[in-house]
Image 1 (spheres, rainbow, N blue to C red):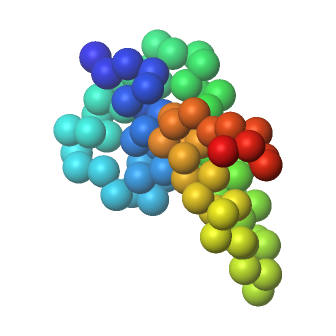
Image 2 (cartoon, helix red, strand yellow; image 1 turned 90 degrees about the vertical axis):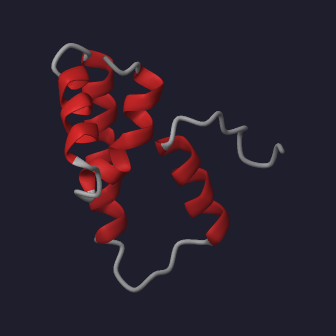
Image 3 (cartoon, rainbow, N blue to C red; image 1 turned 180 degrees about the vertical axis):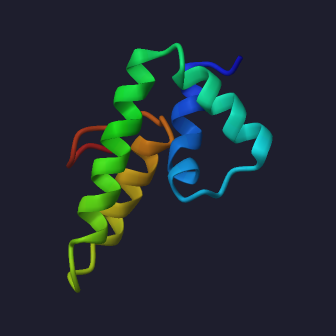
Length: 82
């Protein structure tokens, strides 16, 4: 079974239905036993919905990059720190 790091790294693609069948099955198996990652998935769903409904406002590139890093499970320093 995949670990939490791998599961979080697949979530954005999962929500976009962009995973191969085996990757989807492995993620869903993990989600079936990991409450923490289920919370991460729900957060990702809500974030995706908010971004989609943001209208014509374009998200700044650095903000999008930070969100992408977070969704991929990468450590992101607090805003203003590099």
